[in-house]
Image 1 (tube, rainbow, N blue to C red):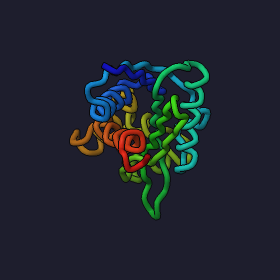
Image 2 (cartoon, one colour):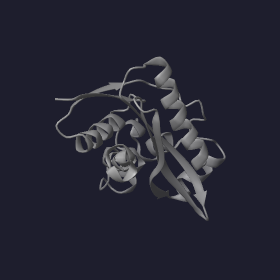
Image 3 (cartoon, rainbow, N blue to C red):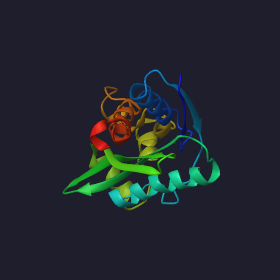
Image 4 (cartoon, helix red, strand yellow):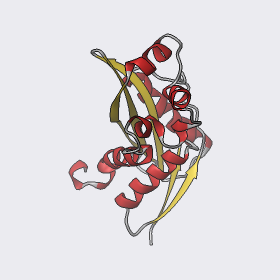
Length: 181
């Protein structure tokens, strides 16, 4: 049985579970080994714009490649916010790097509108992160490592790891589908 090593550029349990689910689906009948590394995004705690968020995801991959070479795949998930017309939108960017081919895929992931009355002033005036605002508003701790704003704002209907797993699956398509070769 073939073995693949996957490095997740985070120690977040939600990101680890999301990566595990997506890779199990993409690579059935493969022995998958997962590793975590708290790679630095080298950007602000709450990136504001798609480009800045993508840069954070890429920086995490580059940091992991420098510090822990030798894995088959490197996966980074970076969350960001942006204003879209009159809405604040929270989204993720997925970056996957395949070491053997040096191929890299960077895509925007799912997004949700954030309630302006809860998030707008704290994000754009006080430069707070969505995770810490969610923690404060809902009276919980470490939402960004576990359920995330997705879960709290949907009354538990959507879990962060499930949303991220789907997005990682989409980012894996160029590595597993014959249509991209």
